[in-house]
Length: 209
Length: 249
Image (cartoon, rainbow over all chains, first blue to last red; front, side, top):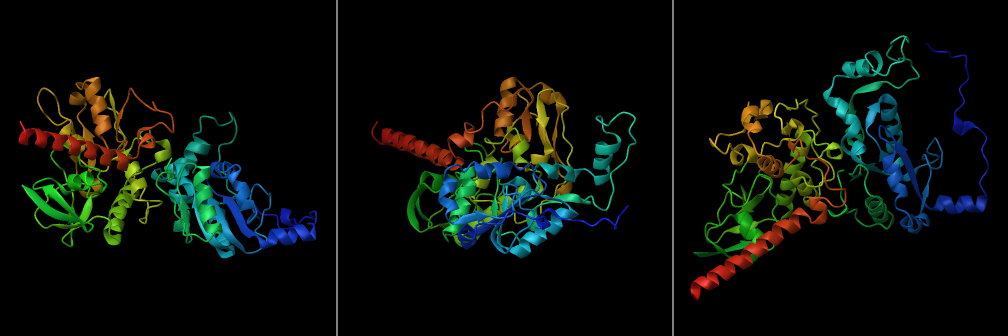
């Protein structure tokens, strides 16, 4: 059911407060980082905040463009680093990840879901139809009396048959495992990249859980 | 009899007949292992300890040292081959560390850290596997089995010496099986022994779980590399003391 008569306005097209030109120039000279969460729990984003005061040393060199922290919904211009959380579970995820690949020099898979599918990938061993049936038809928490239906609309992203790791969709440059990775691990990788060192995540801070 | 070998170019005197993996550890060179249990017959199933001996790839747990062996442990090619073997295990089973009770004391996970695995280069397969909970005390989580066969060989019924665990089927159909009748005869200690012997979280003791908080789990307190090297160093000191005693009674 589509209603093409409605003019869609995206949030990034709405009028916004203008930046102070001097401040904007400083921010634009920094290394641009865009962040996104796909099929994950945003725990890796919270881990990003766990860098605590270590982040201060990065903020002189790095600025965050599109992310849930800044509430920007589009990548405003080409970025150096893309921070990707979550696995790929629907067609919208694929589209956005490809958009990130086109607009970022370096993409980093952060967390178990982005690296191999993680907790959402537990549905990979169950046929998709069975998943839908369990969630919408035979759901024990369904509203009594409500019509049981599997949601379908062109505006709702289509669920992929399996949850895929990001690197099975586009090329990913670096991986930070963990569920979530420690703030220390995220800092180590970002700090290496920002300072032009070869990225190295030592075994004592590498975690899969 | 003492033989002269070299490991990564370093000259070493070793006892003929000792396994390469032990000689290396005694000399401070860590070789990752998953199926090998020191003091038990070697299984040679996992190949994680692969090294190059005189240019040929061999498993370090099954090959005894002989005179003049040139062993390459940390060369770039063989290091990457070992890493690939560990990555294959992660791609083949469903190793969901965040939801696994064994996490933090899992030898596969600890070995993954040691070989610097961030992601598997092979596509993750997500093969459906059935969990077996027929035994009263053992939870068999087949998703995680790496077919090392430690449990098959070393966990046996105390009375009859029959195998409690076995592998049924071949190739991609292979799966670990448990004999519930014999398993239910296992003492609490033997169940604990079996679950500790399992290098992954496949054999889970139903009565235990999540005992150690994150940060205080086995391999977080001390890495698997440090554990292997420290144990070997202690054995070496003890052996030297013994041999001195023999020479000067």
